[in-house]
Image (tube, rainbow, N blue to C red; front, side, top):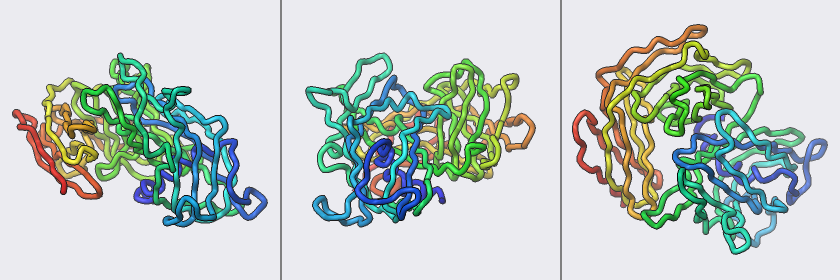
Length: 389
């Protein structure tokens, strides 16, 4: 499955994650004409939150992308009781087994994900706890009625078990609404097929002083984050599961220079180990430049890309966009990024890329369209404005 297909299939699997212990709407299973889907859940860094809770009530899937609510052919997965999960307990390689379910074999192209409502009985069915703050209900109105409709593509083979892991990015999925103290849930989720437990992971160590939620380790392809995590208290990071391929590993941390290791391989037969506890990566300190701006509509996303000399381009930062005003703010390191090429069996040796120091490309995206603006963080940057039709 290509990266493009992984993103396309992502939201299907969000709903199917609720399958454990539930029934489906049609015959199937091992030994019959249907297949089985086995789902596990994981999460990326928390990004300023102590908890992000979601409660899944039911999932409806259909093989037609245009089927209406009343059409025949729906398979409905009901969780009884509805399942509440704190996504932030699942990071740094930790997985939660959500169970498996039988489905009629075939290709599913529409999914309706229905979350339990935040009501008087359960006011925090879906909620967020900002760091240092109190629990606040997440606004998810579209997913509490007929269900959040998604056009998707996932194949369920006959007489086989399809293992997938859902990777929920809580940092990018929780959106603040101005100064109201309220938050919206805007799910950003990918799915990774698990071919083998023997590999599909990258392991390494940062200095333990960097063990904070402002530190992120990610694997990227062409500037697209495929998997991200934060180090544990010992500085260890585990990126799992990751599709087979070659990646750029990127380390970002508040007040530190960016670190990049190119050509990191991921295979299904063994772990990829970058270093050990005796040789942790220690990104040097860096002054930062705060870049602010606004984007219209407020549902758009903003990120900062940085191109190293001779490539690659990496995502150096993600800017949270206020759901009400469209305002964003991002802190970018000014120091030269450090880069090294992966070499099996040896600890990477880093060299500064002075040409790329402080040079970024802000990219806004909305409804499939993108706009960019080059900035030089070595000097003050005027507020940036992006407007989409």
